[in-house]
Image 1 (cartoon, helix red, strand yellow):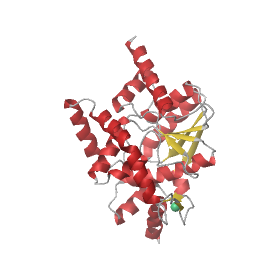
Image 2 (tube, protein in one colour):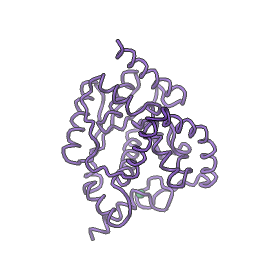
Image 3 (tube, helix red, strand yellow):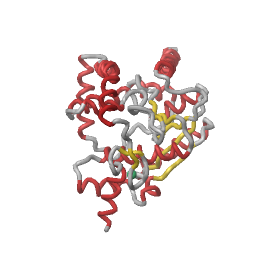
Image 4 (cartoon, protein in one colour):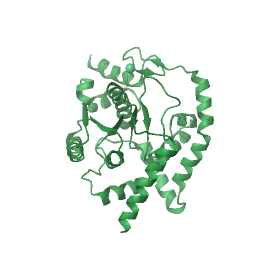
Length: 289
Ligand SMILES: [Zn+2]
């Protein structure tokens, strides 16, 4: 009985977020970026259950058994719930493994695996979602992720980096960017864990074996510790951020003057002559020569 109430409240929270922030409509063609983990499976299930026009897109990173199990779980989940699943292979798209790219980039730049992977993921997934004619791209980002992002940008001394965060990602709509939305924006990691456990989804809870986000993990531990003494600290960070977002967006817009260019290598949208994904790929190519 307690579980039933929990599931109802959880579902209501997602519906409220979608309505309050105008994230999705029933006529949208929606792609859910799926990793096979608890967050993306939860939102894929819910949107399908609520009658949205969804299909799933998995970027297969081909990182050993971890990726194999996540792919298998997602395939079985989509088959069971009659959801179309698209798969792209990182190796096929890049010409080499994501692991190879990470080691090449790290040999030349002080970046972490998750940064390299995050850039490549966004680049490949945006392109594929656009090819599939998606109106919206749903990601499984939750309240913990967002509070960490906001806090990280403050500690980097650059809060203006947060202008593109929020339930609807990006500063403004861009033709080449499929609009990314985060219906799990106000759900905590712990709430999602509980939801997926009650639902009994067959998913992996372990993190990627190559994950090395030292800075992010430090922030996560710090916020988790804070929350023991100051409940709602993460929610407060996000709420406060949403109030300041319009000013951040305004400042960023006047700085960029609508100046999104096209990457001279891949043609995807970029803030510089060459996009971040191509900057990384170029390092791997150069290393091979
Ligand atoms: Zn590029």
